Image 1 (tube, helix red, strand yellow):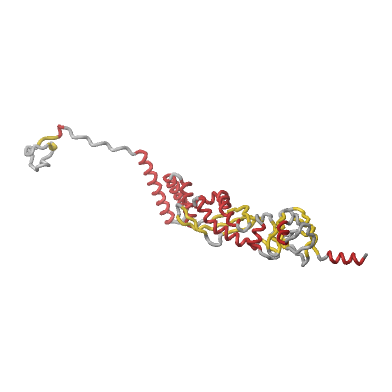
Image 2: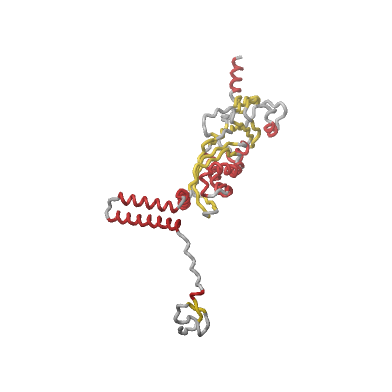
Length: 331
């Protein structure tokens, strides 16, 4: 009896009867269950935890996909595997297959940034070079497509294997997203949230073909070219100044005060005199603008102030000694 029990334990040790994966990492996307060359027993227990999907692969071909739950492997819950192996109803023998666990949780706080400036066409400044950076998150949306297009037949895969491709895809499409949003370059800093949401809609389809889903896309900063930043500073300054006449008077008064406090001798005196002249001119211009009166119209000549030339008969001023028309000397 002991001999048969030992033989049974040896035979049983050649088969896999429990299949599961306990993920202890933060960045593992795919893990291939290690069978150690053993065959899987029909009726074995398969445990798929939350945020996992188990994919059965038969001779390099994707077969059945198992969502979170506990399964007892049989021909009923492995229809594709049963068809590929041409198992008859009631098949109860061990079999060989690869089991891949795909992590479907959301991978957060992934960094992105523009290694080189991206081009944007702006209505006011023309072509503008922008630099930007931020974070994004993604997950595996279609495990079967992801295994076909990205993973292959490796033993496991981490986020490092796909983030490079994702970042390049996002950055290349960012300029299109900014251009399509039609937000002026001067207003980008005030519209990070709106631009991030719009970019998410534009960029998400670009990685969907890999079986991935872009869950979030956040723009933390956009750096504008130096000349555009200077234009923004000038506009801000103009808005703060307001009335230029009052601002000129204020600047002149400030200059006089600084010159009075300056102990630099002749240079200080010259600066004070120049500032005083500027202020005097500004105040005089303002006073003239407020008190100027229209000049009176010249009075028309009366009839008693004129006479007629005896030679040509033209009307001329009475005090004239010569006729301005014909030049004749008047009596």
